[in-house]
Length: 534
Image (cartoon, rainbow, N blue to C red):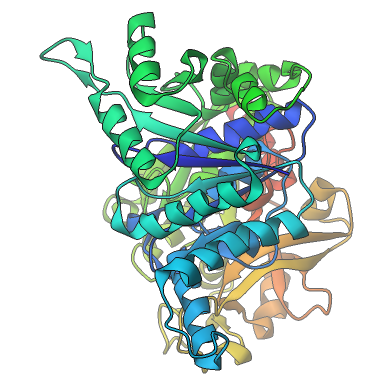
């Protein structure tokens, strides 16, 4: 087993997750089986209760784990199917240690960061190694070297490399090489200081990935190699990719990252065949057609809040040789200006998941505009509930129909709480989470797009369609085309008479990959292209 640890220095948001995922891509294309995991030093147990403004998207795995959005990169860039084992936070570590202390597992010893907390961290690496068959485990350490909360993780990794052998471990440090405009030059000192901090702890990186807005010349590479004690070929340039993040593996391969890492771990590997990946990137960068999709949400100014949705649109667009231009629209702006003013020029409307009532009426106006003007509509999670509320009000004439999340006193609660959710007070991990089966209705668009009778999809929600309104809705033209196997929960709704009006209670964006776009995103993109060309 080989272990690669990716740390970050100087500043946050350098793209450690993208670098780790890209390395995973390259090693997979060299024939290795790769597993990735993320260690986050924050004290939250998981990001499930964190605001998207703080943390971006919460990514949900098959087993229901609410995880960091970087795990989305890991699953999209590799064939790995991850679980709760692959995201560890300080909150989980300390929760486990305290639980063991309360049980008496430590036999009355004083509980300390070393060895008890560090043992817990090392234990997670060993557990992943034992339970997930792989040749290489790539572990990204969140935060920035020097952060006080990250020190136990780095100390654990220092111990770990001694235990498994330095020849089986490669540390990669992602760092910033800033350009000082007034001086007109790149500066290496921040990287030198960051690497020195790591070496104080007892960790010596074998590779430095340098994020920079300008290319690194030979002199600067030599300076970094000398002061940071890495081989010259271990200084890797990582410029911002021009068009799509899927260029990152190609750029890092050109820099020799995968070759350097393989050599440092004593691996004799064939060259990667990146032909298919390059073809995918070419279709993303140079599509034959372009369409516009309005994503109507309330965290719209944040790039990472709907990260998986944007990537899924990219995947489906490439499959159809079509660029998908996202028009981000704040739902509250639709409430103020009206749907026609903001949606007139788009080829599709997508309403993503979310919580809370802010912007809800704007989303309902957007769904109505798409339905009445034959614009392709795709609703995800809350987007399905919005579509249902709109249809109930304006087609079924159920005045003031709503979700009890937004109006507990609504006379027509078309969206309501499940019985088992009514008495839950804790927010964390208390929703319907993870993979659940959906039975597809014969003859429906959903069945046609999936090409099979039953699918598994990932959920993250607390409210459900109220089954007592099923007959009323279907008689008016809203088909419930996907249900739980026992038929009690509505999972997919669609309007057969519409060019494309489909909404799902789950999150299909969590299962889309570059070379295997999700069938529903694929169908939505085809419908947008037909609308554009028609």
